[in-house]
Image 1 (cartoon, one colour):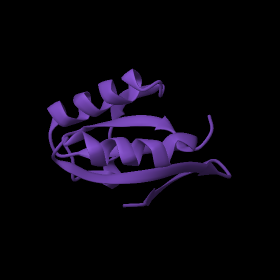
Image 2 (tube, one colour):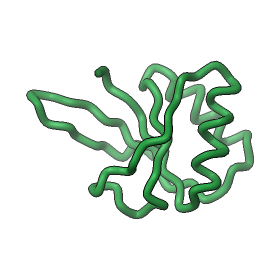
Image 3 (tube, helix red, strand yellow):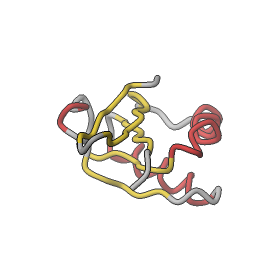
Image 4 (cartoon, one colour):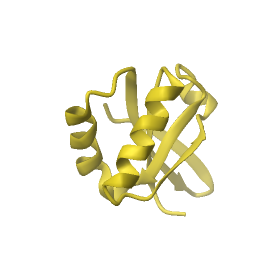
Length: 87
């Protein structure tokens, strides 16, 4: 699978709201378990393709959805998955 973005919130309701917002705006997204290395969360995150990051960031900013923690860029290199906090 290609590189992707995880959006992490502190509250599950916000996670689900943002997932629905992305989908309503034509971005394929799913709810996944948050990796332990990004554990300051509600336990679930929204995952979507990295190519949609800028649009998704603007959507979040305009949405008023609260409890946002961070965006993480997730990539796999040489069989190792790496998370990089990007905001």
